[in-house]
Amino acid sequence: MGANMQRQAVPTLRADKPLVGTGMERAVAVDSGVTAVAKRGGTVQYVDASRIVIKVNEDEMYPGEAGIDIYNLTKYTRSNQNTCINQMPCVSLGEPIERGDVLADGPSTDLGELALGQNMRVAFMPWNGYNFEDSILVSERVVQEDRFTTIHIQELACVSRDTKLGARRDHR
Image (cartoon, rainbow, N blue to C red; front, top):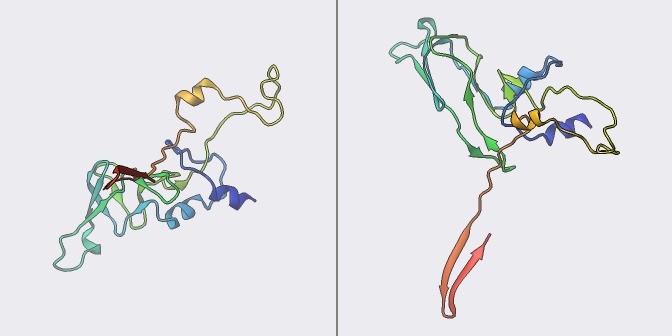
């Protein structure tokens, strides 16, 4: 049951790694392929929202090689589930990097760890009948901080054709 719920999780705008974990969160995030992982060790030479440049350590370079690794990040791309794939750098300029370090977070990852939900403080209590049976109440602060906000990208097509009877539009 837990695996099915994890499969249905939608990436939130701001990922929040869990306070209590199993120890597998980093391995799952890296193996999923949504994070950018360093191929070789070195130092961050340049970083912005769309690119990370690493100057590779001398001992990890091949003879005659430039010694620069460039990682282009995926920005606001649509997934097959119409969710947003956006990678954000989690390294800073001049930071030393080892092979296998996470350079950029993807959807549902926070500092290289899987982050499917949000850490929330909840109370199970009646409130004037507004939370009868399966309804919930949400604090205004949760809405203001965009804790459960998601971005969905939908691709639509509109074809216009001229026929003998006049213009015709097909909407898909």
